[in-house]
Structure formats: C-alpha cells, structure tokens
Length: 216
Image 1 (cartoon, rainbow, N blue to C red):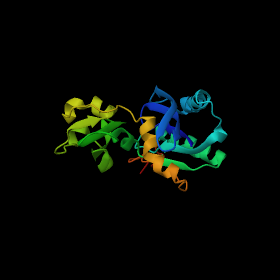
Image 2 (image 1 turned 180 degrees about the horizontal axis):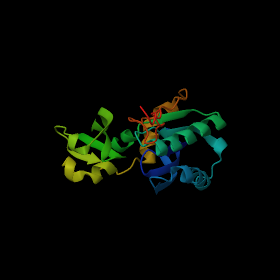
Image 3 (image 1 turned 60 degrees about the horizontal axis):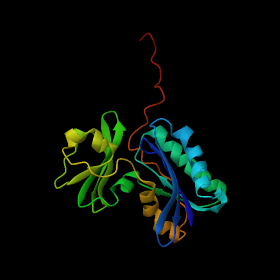
Image 4 (image 1 turned 45 degrees about the vertical axis):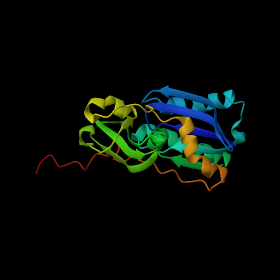
C-alpha cells in the first residue's frame, strides 16, 4: 500500500512516499529545513514525491502525519494538509508523535528534545525506542533525568552544553520512522483518526484583551 507521509512539527518540512506491506520502504522523500516555510513548501514537495514514485494521488491508501509537539503555525500547516488530502481522497489519516519518530531506534534510556523557541524545548524520554515520559515543554536547564545515555533532536543539539548528554541520534524526524510507527494501523486498515495537534502551550498570537477606559 502506498502512503503519503508529512511532517512540519520541526524546522524540517517533510513529505515522503512510502510503501507499506510486510516491510516499510521509502520510495521518495523531500526535506527542506525552513522553520517558517511549511505553508509554501509542503504542497510542492508532495507533488514531487508522487512524481518521483510514479504515483498519482488516487494510488494512495493512507496519509501519515506528524502531530507534534511543535510551534502552532508550522505544525498546523502539515496537519491541515494531511487532513485535507485524506478527505479529498476518502482515505484514512493516522497521526504519529513527532518525538517518537526521532526516538525510534535510540538505544537504552534516551532523551529527545526539539527546539520549541522561547529558549525552551519539547521533550520526551525513551527506553529502547519506547516512550517513557512526555511529551512536554520545558527550559533545558530544568531537565534532569537519571540514567540518560544519549540525546537526539535539534533541541538537544542546540542546548547540548546545558543538557550535558551526548547527542548522537537524528536531528529531525525521519519519514521512514513516521511510516514505521503507523505501519500496523495501515496494514490492518484501521479507521482514520481525527488529528489532534500536540501544541503543549498557547500560540504566540492571542486575541487582545478588553481595552480599559482611559479615565478611571
């Protein structure tokens, strides 16, 4: 079965075409690191991977989308695109925690941290690739976990000196890992899901409060 994979939860805008049968095979992938370009980049990348894989939209059996955590605007672009594609083609859409895709395959106790801006990181801890704690958002200096042997993610790289953990894993979520985490649902033709974004905090832009009178 052919599956479209999209993720915009980090600075890496990702679209990929994967085949899921007994194995998970990546047929084509486009990744552009641009923290503010998800809205413009994702649709052309989807078209490009379909062309490279010699597939048409109607050949797709499902869509896999990273659901964060991530900043509001970037994350929303990928999830809206995934939901719209699934609706237009009448195929199921499956969500995957973006941190889980980075953590998949990390050995032992590991920390995954991605850049949350505002001098914070989105984080989760893993044991042999399985999530133990998180996801959550925090300042790097507030993260202290016993027994963590390795860290991964762009947040871990950015704050490596603060975290004090060797950074060895992937910087951004890989499309193959995202597809692998959804593979059992794709194979079983599980019902599609309503994508729920992991924002973890309020967006930067908020409605202004009620204006106070000038004279009191």
